[in-house]
Image (cartoon, rainbow, N blue to C red):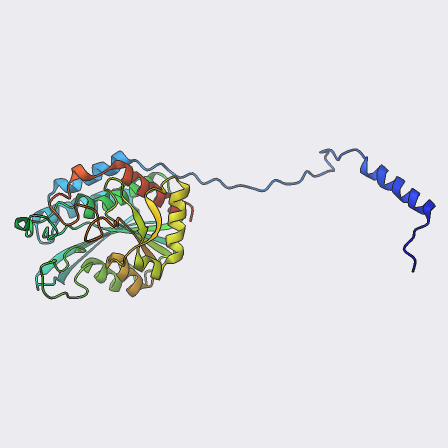
Length: 335
């Protein structure tokens, strides 16, 4: 077969191609269809109010240390229950008695607010609302047996969740959301105790993870907030979070950086923290991460005033509350 065309046929073919290519463009007439543009769904995410969150920190701290078996603990429980009940569709108060490391029997309450409780597609948000019964990391040994106010270690995470609950009540979404305020997280073995027993921390979440408020409870993923109010806080990839839920860690940190909070959410690996999320992962198999302030500049790896009498409201920064709260809002509204 030859590869050379007849010259006359070639000229005719070229002329036809030129006519076709120079034809008039198609117009939008009733009988012609313009190409459809790709539909873009815009999600409206409410703005986190850091002043409101700060107010919720103040309200908790005003009760004094929220140590189980104390009057301030009972009064704060009533405040948290009424607040969540006002915002959520359904409220659950899970009361029980647990045993501390030293044999003390603690009357505790896990406080749970649910949005869209009928929806099986759920997200779990949590924080602990109790405070440490001893300031065992205080630089002054005379303060070791002094209960702490816990403005950051406890109240900050709860405050962020209360503000999120308020916004969810005003901006409903279809996804089911559960906000769980765990009790007795901070009654673990003190630093001076000789017997380093396991499972002495996170007593409230240990109980809930084995006795959930709804039978066979499950959520697609969970986010725990702990110590999210200190100035210039840094949140790194906590060890158990990366072990149990690395994809959730990456999603949340990418969201934070996209929202402009990359100076808070650092792409760095950090230590393993025995916290409420550990038991949610272990006992309920819900992939749950911990947004927790970790640093390299202190011996214990936490913020400067951790488990000291200086964990007070004056050391809470609204900018940090905003960074965490807005990030979590983006995550839950975009899922």
